Image (cartoon, rainbow, N blue to C red; front, side, top):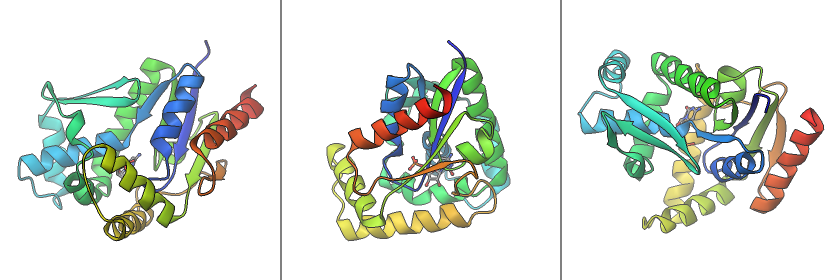
Length: 224
Ligand code: C5P
């Protein structure tokens, strides 16, 4: 099978992960959740009381510890110094602190390097994040920019968290989603923005199946 890179970028809780997993499955490809990488660095920084606003300290932390990222079906399994931290990555405290790590240019360089190495290793990948079509894989065959209204995204995040046993009210989640949108859009390196050649897809009024089918059609049209 020939190499294939499909990027799905978009704002928080736009459904990227679930959609990317399903598309990857349909195309016999590997799903790459790049948010998990930024979450892992944030988690370690919090656990080691590293000053999150000190970029050099964050870089030293990444270089001094062993991160291992392994795509495994529906998620990216993350080991830090051989300890599996995958289950802790979606904790709201990690989410609340992630912007420091995501805004650090030196960290972004290290993460993009890891993403490219994984794409090289797995050959056929569906990768989701914020900068996959713009920075990590500018030559990807297919680029999707997936959005949904903030209210709809907050609702989706609430359902997702509930399934993980975490209760949060809708208003708090809406504020968190909007705050993350703002910081994701405003950072100077790797901001959330569509690639010039990305296909835009608004999933507000679409079911998961409809979004997946729409993307598979786009893939078929672009690469046959
Ligand atoms: O997609 P997820 O919600 O797990 O991403 C968590 C955070 O990681 C995002 O809000 C964003 O700030 C950051 N991120 C990023 N670049 C990526 C993926 C995620 O900056 N490629």
